[in-house]
Length: 295
Image (cartoon, rainbow, N blue to C red; front, side):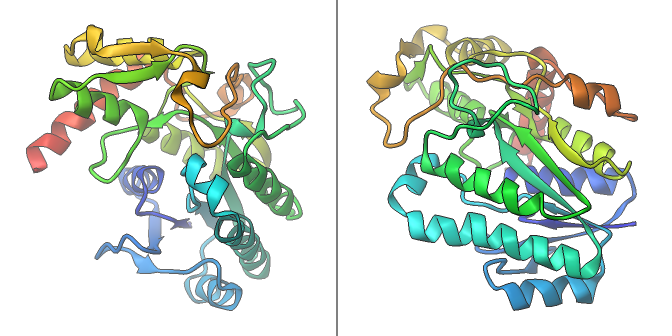
């Protein structure tokens, strides 16, 4: 089996490459702007190039972790983000179809409006910001394939020098004595990237098809997650200031009462399991320690 990771230079992409290597699965990864010596360049917004790339490398599974993830940026750069997120995903889907490869697409809990979470895979989507609108459109295009898997996740964190994930930001800011405003009314499932990667590989290599919620088993407010990060790293809790979402004055609307129900994925995983927030933070701390020794 050969697995292609499109967007292997990001936090989830890197985690996927590491997990594939651990399992001894033949893999290759691509980058777009963040060049890395062990990755191949690919602009997925170019359909002909993308189709030819898959024909040349013949992967059985294509995991797409490439997209524009900055929610506020998406609000003000809609044409660019549509081209990257939606048309890019459509190109990967068409390339998978032409090469008879399985398309695994990384989606988000933001496809829901956060009015009545937590959500199952069957709940109707209702995006409230442009980033989420593009992800819903991506899901529609991927579902036109016969062999696909959509993985919805949220609050992904891990130790990665180039990442701006929430947990890493808390550690970096509080470690130097800077305070941080954290919303008390945004709920979600903190998800360790390496655990997410292991679950994606488990499901996709066992011929699963359809939509799966894959996120940490614990659902809690972002502020409570920040406090647990402080406890894990012996940081000063008083530097975290509880605020409402409205007080943050963010460019894009944020869904509040989110949370993904992960019973379906938990039942169908065969070689791994989904971690709770405590287990995820212990893994994060271990990964952070390794990252620090490499600096």
